Amino acid sequence: MELSESNQLNSITEKVNRLFNKEEREELSDQMVKDIYTKAERIANRNTKVKEGKTSNWEEKLDRILTSKWTGFPIMLLMLGGVFWITLVGASYPSSILNKALFSVEGVLSDMVMSLGIPEWLHGLLIDGVYRTVAWVIAVMFPPMAIFFPLFTLLEDLGYLPRVAFNLDNFFKKAGAHGKQALTMSMGFGCNAAGVIATRIIDSPREKLIAILTNNFVPCNGRFPTLIILSSLFMTGIAGGMYNSFVAAGIVVGIVLVGIMMTFVVSWGLSKTILKGKPSSFTLELPPFRKPQLGKVLVRSFIDRTLFVLGRAIMVAAPAGIIVWVLANTTINRASLITHLANWLDPFATLLGMDGFILLAFFLGLPANEIVLPVLLMSYLSTGTMLEPGSMESFKNILVNNGWTWVTALSTMLFSLLHFPCGTTLLTIKKETDSLKWTIFAGVLTLGIAVIVTFIVNQMIHIFL
Image 1 (cartoon, rainbow, N blue to C red):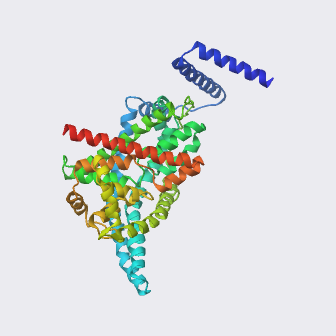
Image 2: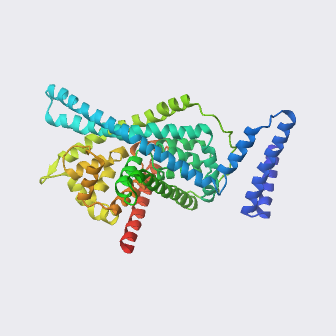
Image 3: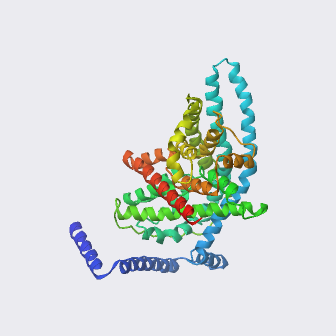
């Protein structure tokens, strides 16, 4: 009996495929789902009493605005820009205070370590290498996360994120991916490792793998400091002082949109080549808007997201500090290993609009994206230890004195957006896919795209300007 029913179902499916083209089948599927929900609503209305009022009408009107193809996307961009602007402005002052506090403790720790009579090289390894790296990561990463994650969780608690998924569903469907990838992509804004874990909500193994491989194209919290700082220093000359933060936020939104566009392009490319298959459909029932529980939002975002991600970043940043310190303090022919490696990379990096020191900083920043800028600063100054510039203006002067222009900043921002995932995300990909092959492919794919995009942009700038 079960076999007969299965054969009948297959026969009906074949007839439908013969009689209708792809667009007609999708329209038929949508109509069937709509009819099912309409009938369910009639049954519910006959058996329950619903008090109609202003609230339900207000929610319906708001839903029409948030999910409209004319107003939904502008509102999404304004929301995104607003979150970035609040994070940018709000994190600046506490980050400065935290930085001064952590680096003031360094002197006390240094004296304590020296009093133990340990060798000078071990002191440098522990204090200048490990502590300064960790202190930089905490000072740069913690304040933005403490602002970004609660804002993101607040939108989630309000019920807005499912509306984002609804708006982006058609784009992912056309790219041969799953509509739920919109949700996993959104999680990547906080942490790409969290975005990779979130792909568990996608049932199809093929579409889950596409979501995993492309999640890195949205910038995580570890890359936002690089994007924000470089945007603030090199991309805001057209605006006056009070408008700099708005321009910087707008530039960062533009970079983010490039990442989202690459997500669609690469998802489409994967679905047409090595991960061929038909996109599976799903029904997304928009939940009602909810009054956010601020206490739970703050606790959940701080403990489950901010502290969790920060802890993982510190775990990979500490050993990275050791490696960087060793490379900076090991010399051959009166030049550090960092200098030798940067000179070797320089010809290739120049084609991408950068220099060897910038490209090397990205490779050394594999454990944690937060250490890219301090590694770069240390390399330029040839100090053998990570330094914190006294101000953003002094930082800009150091970069300009080493040949930076707005083209260098743009190339660095694009490469930061698209390059390989950090060590934590790569380990998460290995765990989720249970495959070293796909983990390596994820790193090679993103690095290749970063190289191609920055090369094309740099060459076009030199041709037209």
